[in-house]
Length: 208
Image (cartoon, rainbow, N blue to C red; front, side, top):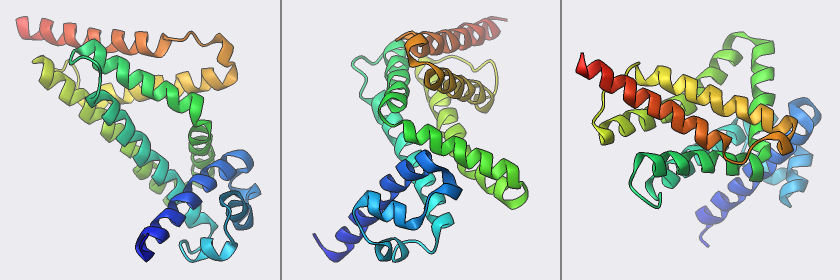
């Protein structure tokens, strides 16, 4: 690898390790040395990429947000069939795979949310802006689904996105509380109901 490629690989390793460590120990309980050890590097490698622990924490959050959004869109675009149900199923299944395979992402989100809300002010504003990437991505998915299906949105796309995201986060809380009580396809089925209701409502409005 070139020097830039090695640096990018090191940064990615540190961000993945940081997400796990911060999720396990919290922002206050984790140290730069903990993250370096988890990633298999020295603390010098951390400080050559990030100014301090807070910057590393935020970068880890942004890294995971961007990755999740990218992978959800890819799952939608590579659904087995180009039908509304197949696309919705692909999206919901990808979200569930995050909960099952990368629980640190949700724990990192909760950690950052609690930290920002407690501090308020600029920290809360900064969190809202970064967290808004989820809403923006879901808004685009809703808009694109309506365009593909040729139906009018019954509500602004960003409002439907808020409801869908609240559904995902609520399911996450239920899942981590007791995974055994989470029906296997419940997120997929409820997401289908939301999109089906939006389509039918939109078509009813067009008929008036």
